[in-house]
Length: 461
Ligand SMILES: Nc1nc2c(ncn2[C@@H]2O[C@H](COP(=O)(O)OP(=O)(O)OP(=O)(O)O)[C@@H](O)[C@H]2O)c(=O)[nH]1
Ligand SMILES: [Mg+2]
Image 1 (cartoon, rainbow, N blue to C red):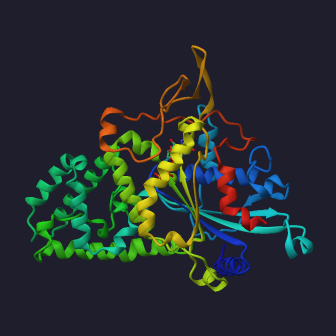
Image 2 (tube, helix red, strand yellow):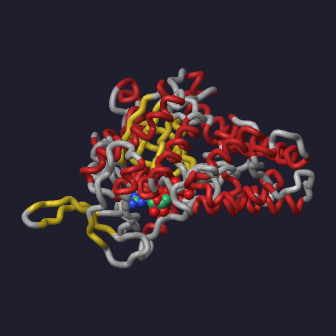
Image 3 (cartoon, rainbow, N blue to C red):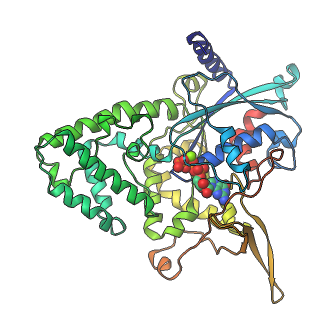
């Protein structure tokens, strides 16, 4: 695509937005929440899923008005393309595997064709089109957004408050000791690199130690195209080291400002500032498995993220020049890891987890819904009979295992459990490998049709 095509492409996008035939859907979630699986499934459902039995609650399909979706062929060359076909290959191989964790951002546009159901369009046109724009990125980068609200000093204090919490203290001690021995006048390349590597290693350890979510800056974990850039020499000095001026403080403050200006702001502007609708995916079950501190940190992380988005109704001009998110779907992902009668409790738990974050965001003006879903269902459900009693169960293959299992993974608490409950009742929801799939069938799911109806249903009328 040449620069002229690029300009034409931008023009078409603007035209479609003006005609309200363009939606930019933000799929938001921390690392591992299920963004890539969600986008892959959504594309698969929309390009293959015109069978009413597969999407019973998606009204455009149910009413026989859906004419199909196709991947846009015209995409500016500078935009990395979402590796949809590659992700499908992972899911379709024998044995099936999950697509890998995302290491850079990518985009894919879909054109959805449908018969208008009512109104002027139904009388004048035999079909209409809706452009859907989807973006994927590493979850780690999302947590950079709150850094825009802080300066370097505030960020360092915030980090050390976090690192001194009981579940992080032991891991962060060696890095604190290293900083204590650091000469604050030494700003040699060797020293900066040594401290950055030590801090990256600490972040990596936090990640591997299940139950920590707030890892900043995200580019130290997933650098993308910025690997080796000097502004990534970024680490929080100790609170006592930021009260008096020093060459090292001055240098890392400059790196922090560059990181905010040249990495986070453009990332936000390009991917998040123009969202029309949003899905917030939350993996509540893994947080329950990881314990009380994990649940609390997850809540804190969600709170910080929610403050970074603009919510509210928009006018025509607003949609073009200052878009806001008008609809938000809060979704507890991987609901196929529990038995169906637990989905209600999982949704209530998600709502409680988000209660505080929502209070502090401006999201109230948006239309919202909460549900438990599985973008790609990896279990089948049924009942086992014991002494004349029927008990619900799921069957699937645990990640890393060869043989399938049938199990009852346990009850999901309908509200945030207190620390004492975690002590006497550890949660152990399994992680499952994908089911064997066939190319011709839409991916199995739980409530993707509800999600599609909420997110797109009104635009496909
Ligand atoms: N059973 C089940 N597991 C899922 C589902 N979606 C995601 N998973 C699991 O969660 C893992 C992470 O999912 P991804 O879609 O890669 O998560 P992500 O949010 O894109 O993560 P990053 O790319 O690291 O930001 C997968 O490898 C699966 O193990 C689902 O619908 N059902
Ligand atoms: Mg991903």
